[in-house]
Length: 83
Image (cartoon, rainbow, N blue to C red; front, side):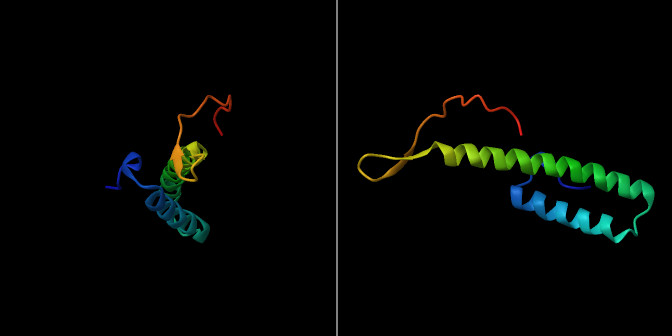
C-alpha cells in the first residue's frame, strides 16, 4: 500500500510524482492503472503545492533585525488567497 500523502515530505512526494509522470508518459499502463496513477499524481501535486506555500510563508516571515541577526515575525494577513 502506498505511503499516505499527508505524511510525505515535499521531496518524497515530488519524487513519487516524477515516477508517476514517467510511467504515464511511457504509455504502457492499463487504463485503470493509468487513471489511478493520475489521481494519485494529482493529489501529490496538491500536496507539493501546499508544502511550497508553507515554505514560502516561512521565508516571508524571516526578517533581519537592527543588530544584523535574523529572526522571524508573525505573518500579517496579506490578503493573498490560494494558488
